[in-house]
Length: 196
Image 1 (cartoon, rainbow, N blue to C red):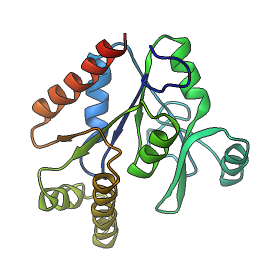
Image 2: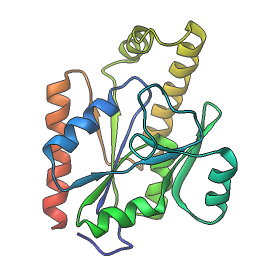
Image 3: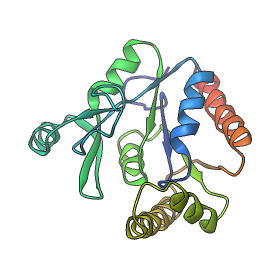
Image 4: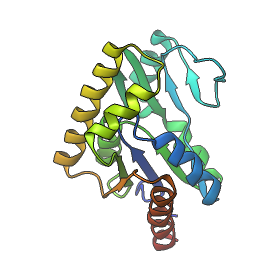
């Protein structure tokens, strides 16, 4: 593991809504034991079945902004009117456990991590095509057509931002879940071996 400031023990997985990054990170955690999942904080209300401190730390907007002003987040963003951020404590927690920290965050957050931790490994999960992404978003059946259109526009913007920034080290195409999982696992394991 690198020193406390290097960031090479931080792995960021980003990608637009609907690309399958949550499924991929869950599978990655099952196969790579030296990773600790970073629990983000958010101001959005919990969804059915979500537990505070497991999926997210659910905070009021005032509490989130208080912690932000105190330097309590390594990255943060506002997405669809809700604030999200990675608490600094999550990095320290993983390091105490001798693990690398896995962050599943949006591109805005990934760019902030890159600025703060130059050696972090940033991986972008991408759809096989924009049309497939549109189909996946609509296929969820949990949102109105207007909300799907808004998410799709945001997804296009995120992909553009990630690709033009040059901050992401590599892309993994999630066309076939098994292959994408193997590709992602290979990238993360290689980084862990290099940094050991």
